[in-house]
Amino acid sequence: MEIKILFDKEALDRSLYRGWGVSFLVNETVLFDTGENGRWLLNNIKNLKVDINKITTVVISHDHWDHTGGLWELLKNREGLKVYACPNFSSSFKRKVEKLKGRLIETEKFTEITEDIFITGEIAGEYKGRYMPEQVLVARTEKGLTIITGCSHPGIIKIVEKVKKDFPDMKIYLVFGGFHLIDKSRQEAKFIAEKFKEIGIEKVGPTHCTGYDAQMIFKEIYEDDFIFIKTGQTLEI
Image (tube, rainbow, N blue to C red; front, side, top):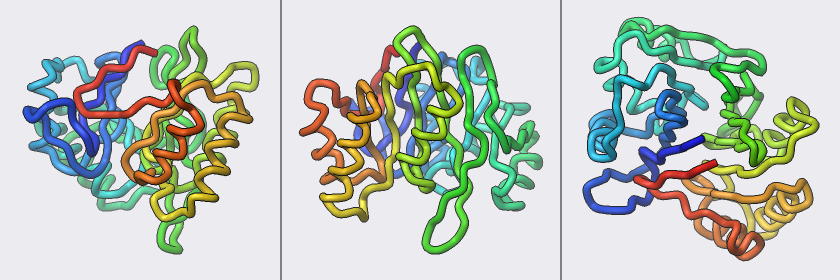
């Protein structure tokens, strides 16, 4: 299975836009999040020679501008895309998807959206003292499970443990995306990285809102099994 990094805070070369938020394309057809800016996302799609017509499905992790920002331009160019959202996303988000003729699908529970690609459905999180629903994407391959996160507002350990309950007999090969440790202490980040090792997670790719200090802690603990995530990269899982 192949994952292309279409948008993140770092890029492999200057032809690619970078910024806040993430966008990851799985097996050419399933897009997880859309970054902060539609024009930038479409530029990267073009420059990375991605066939936009093969994208059939968009999964939005949570209803924040840096994860939904590219969706609107994408829908203008790909009318009829399936858009998976949590039931408790804002009504304005849902109305806008429908206005742009996207096929809104609200996922409360664990769901297989295509062969060997799953979403958790809504997981309860918190942001600035308010309820924040979020979902993550899970890919199943011969190497094990790959968990792809947007911002991990419910807590990255809570998310991993939720996935483990859904797949009790499978190892976790890779966890990557935003871990939202940017405002956590070094001690908290180290505890989480060590917990990853204890759980048996083989590789990690913390990026976006993880924060530089927390990324370096994961790098120290995971050494060669740490992956720097950059726009333009392709991961083989």
